Amino acid sequence: MYKIDFNHPIHVHFIGIGGVSMSGLAEMLASRGFTVTGSDRSPSGLTDRLEAGGIEVSFPQCAENITRYSGTDAIDLVVFTAAIHEDNPEYAAARESGIPMMTRAALLGQIMAQYPHSFAVAGTHGKTTTTAMITQILSAPDIDPTVSIGAVYPALGGNYRIGKGDTFIAEACEYTNSFLSLFPKVGVILNIEADHLDFFRDLADIRASFRCFAAQIPEDGTLVIGSEIDNLREITDGLPCKNIVTFGLGGEADVRATDIRPTLSPDGETLTSFRVVFRDGSSPVTITLRVPGLHNVKNALAAIAAARVREPDTGRIVSGLEDFRGASRRFERLGVWHGITIVDDYAHHPTEITATLTAARSMGFKRIWCAFQPHTYSRTKALMEEFAAALSGADRVVLSDIYAARETDHLGISSRTLQEKIRDSGHECDYFPSFSEIRQFLSENCSEGDLLIFMGAGEIDKIGISMLADD
Image 1 (cartoon, helix red, strand yellow):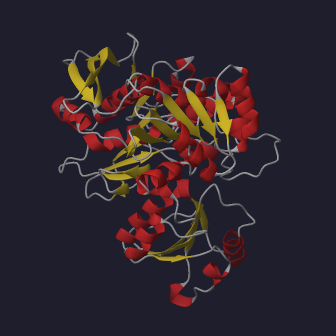
Image 2 (cartoon, helix red, strand yellow; image 1 turned 180 degrees about the horizontal axis):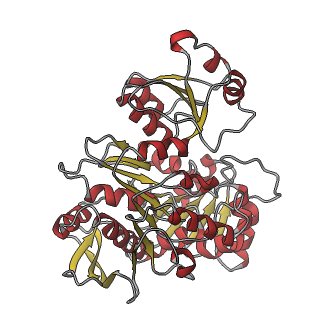
Image 3 (cartoon, helix red, strand yellow; image 1 turned 90 degrees about the vertical axis):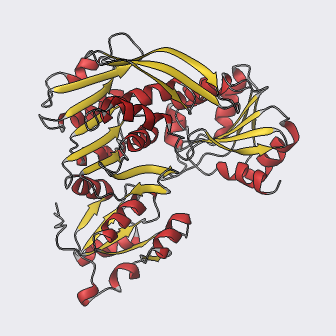
């Protein structure tokens, strides 16, 4: 594999530079003096930011974006994502020209290797939130970390942070085994469930990959792992790293939560208070989170367990978490429209949907509406029954068409299939093929005191944004 010499900047071209992770990595290299160019299918807020920072971005993707550079301006390295296939014109041009090529994950791994204190957060759910929580805890000037997160984190003003310290914090995705390009000093595994079944064969295959990720943590490193993961010892036994810290709600966890209770702030904000108990004998602490749900209590426990490796001051850990306001599209309150509270949530797996709707149920709204956009045909087909059961946690469900993402429709399923499953269980569910029809239906049927959640990893949040913009 091509090895970057970070002391000798080169010209790096990013295919798909407008992606959340790709854009952050591009700016990290640019900050180190690298010449950075890139391309994407169409402009976006992230590409606007890159261009404002002096990075040249081309639209759309075509072979000329590779071949037009020559001589001293020639591209030395091409970086691409898992969404880029061999028939992509820039990928093909780079390969034909003999230019070294590298995946996004491999670049992330090489950047991470430059830092003696590195954190990688993996798991089927909660990666972005937990990465953001660790970032919030460790953002003190004396640590000053560099960060790569898989979503916009408002406290950073974006999806990355370039610090001057010796600490690197990154989200680690299991899709296409990209997290196996990372060798963190502190690895976090939040949970392991069936997902990305367009790549993995089954849950056993997924568990094997997480085991490999854990095995890449060095002997003097730390694995932080959820105590509720099934057959945990299959993941943890015989690992090179000797320090394994578990977290969870159960009494056997090394870092666990007790006395969990919802509370209200003076301005009516829903909070979650809990006591953190440490098996190593450290003094318990009480934390009040500003993000709802038991799933976020677990995320906070993981963040505490990981952050303690770098930050021994428990008081600073507590204050960092209590300042945490959530990441973009993670139960993000967009506003109120005619008395209807509108929230955007990235949940696109049944477990995530259940966690979000359970948290919403505790907040005292009259009715919970869920406008859901399924994400990828393969996930929808593989987890059809689970999606139907999870979405039934809302009072009313409205479905849009499936967001294809990296796939094409060849599996013979649609949102109408999911609608039928939900209706068969006795719950109300409507489907509309266009966002305009969904907006019209919601406008006519939601009422004051309702909670309206736009849910999914695609673009359905645009409906809520447009409703508030036109109010």
